[in-house]
Length: 157
Image (tube, rainbow, N blue to C red; front, top):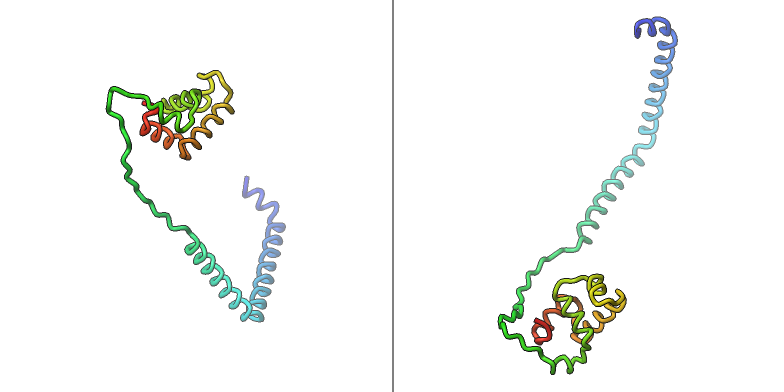
């Protein structure tokens, strides 16, 4: 089938190939003329591209933050005493309400804010308010720090 196609369209294919070859020769001559007449600009452009690439690479290398991993070993308070005694004096001193104490106990049990809200039958915003007030009163920034400090102060077990 392909031989029949080539034999029928032989003149058209030769004519198309000749035009493509002629166009290729003309473009090659044009590029040769551009290269010969603009040699200096081409070299300067090439050098500029090399230095631009080098500059980008160097900027990325220098601006990349150096990450340093620091391992901090910290003694964690663990109450091994089976006879837990609640510290009411510390609770009154920090002005922690009973509801905030309940939220703190549920936090130490590992419950999320949504789970605490469902368990206490309050809204999620109420739990967040209690949590933020607890953080302020205990002078901490995270739940884990609040739990650790509360255990250290014998507010929770």
